[in-house]
Length: 441
Picture 1 (tube, rainbow, N blue to C red):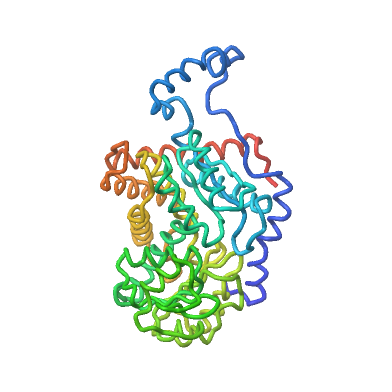
Picture 2 (cartoon, rainbow, N blue to C red; picture 1 turned 90 degrees about the vertical axis):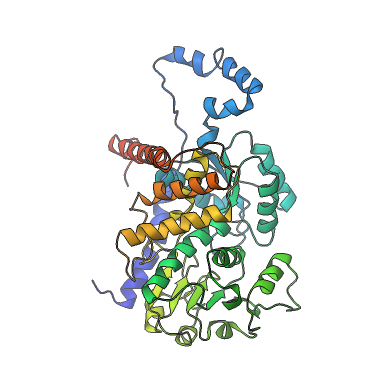
């Protein structure tokens, strides 16, 4: 069905209108329910006092037994200070809570992972690092979310080094994994090798910096990457760049020493990766028109892409992807973090490495290829549930290969474990709706 531009715009704005109506309808998107049986009140003698003292003593004598007696092995915290929420900026922890609750239901429904949103009144790197270390006894992993650059880099690096459980920053690693997956398949369609393509990047925040690093590890030539921040193209020796992380990106990329505004970054490149300010007028049609043949355009700002997909197509883009589920080619973290954490928890990995993320990206791309790759179907949709256990297997096997997994599973065992958890979560949600415990609007 062909829509007019007005109809497309109305369709694009509808989710926001629905969200304002339905969030108050439910008064929050998550609740806690018991996982154990409660046959009669006498069962509380098992689950609480006096019986509970026995597992407490067992854990005290054998710390690893916490994973047998408690929910820790399938429980993560979604931690945010609300300093960079979606494309909305520093709106604070309370205003960021709807996002973190949404993250928690995606974790559960797509990955079978129990997640608790923790929006905190913490403002410094030291406070957030300290908070995460304090809550480690309860959780099997930490998902850092919507924390401003540059402190998000220091927080992640510090916790990956010092934490006892896996910690990752979804805006960095999750975005990078799914973007790499989409680009792998986009390049297959236009028949261009990843090691030879030129890549222009709009935005120099946490997401694009990690994407550049992960692309290089996945085979792209960093010399041919041109990143642009609000002051122009980044290059080695640019005097206004003081942040050490961005300075490292400048040293790694742009061998041509391109200088100037965004139009310079995209001239003659094969790929545009925009993760910057929400549009729809952030990316100019002229920039796309100046790209190489068969331009690949990823405009992934939320809640509104840097340019509407139909405008990008009109400007000559061969392939267009956004971060939204209501347009073709959604390049969204939701396709990554549930399966990646599922695989991490199932083998009890000590951290989440870039190699584990790249393994997930390659498997994500392979699922799309297996299911029929085309210009409007670069990567699977969230409806293709098998992508999540397949990602989990790829991630877990890479963790085992890297020697950071405490549980050794065969690929078949890993798939069965992930499939069981995910199917349980989905069946339980359907049952609660069918029985009326979750009312339909």
